[in-house]
Image (cartoon, rainbow, N blue to C red; front, side, top):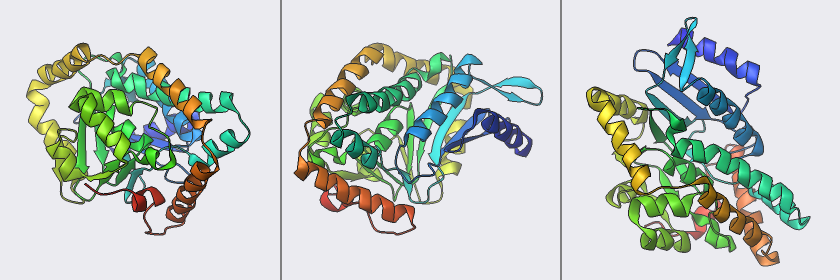
Length: 306
């Protein structure tokens, strides 16, 4: 695995990736992706650009990675986080506020479209037959971070993780896939309830609701991925096909995602000073997390844990 990691790091350097890194386990054909935004625990433009660069190459190679002078198959593509206690706190609110204050619709639309450009290929399993995608959530996943996790076939979460959609707290809604992805898993009524409540949900509760597939003790997340892989390996063809059937029965199209994200951009531009003050509080709390503070985000303070 060390040799594979070194080769992957060379690829990352060639693509100028700083906010996303990958490792390849050739024995289990697992591609590990780790988000690590340098500017803080939120989804920056650089993170979105880095993931798209990497995944575009992955797609162009037919879902294979270069290892020991040849392209090797990937059976499982796992995405986790290098940030302790955080999977992702979602959108770059400071950037959103700048765009809103200068009425820059094009910049907001560019960010939102890049988000969809990352989300949609994962929903489609990168059009790679028999590929299974897995989100490994070892810390809090809020807003866009939760949306990113929902785009996977399987969600494995450690018990301390909390997830939710706090956007309603500053008079907005999650506009990059949450409604579509939640509705596919639990139906539109519960999806709307989660979106409109702004509540945070412990991993165990999300498992009961049918959103998280596996909950494991803190520190056992990576081992749980290997447990899952060992469990399904002999029947991976059927398991992967079942996940493809889910997409066929409950299809999510890029057009649908773009219509919703356009609604999000227009709604963001209607936010008033009170809404922006709430966003400012959350930005300040995210800055504390970047500096190593254990204080929860402002959205977490306002939301009810369910």
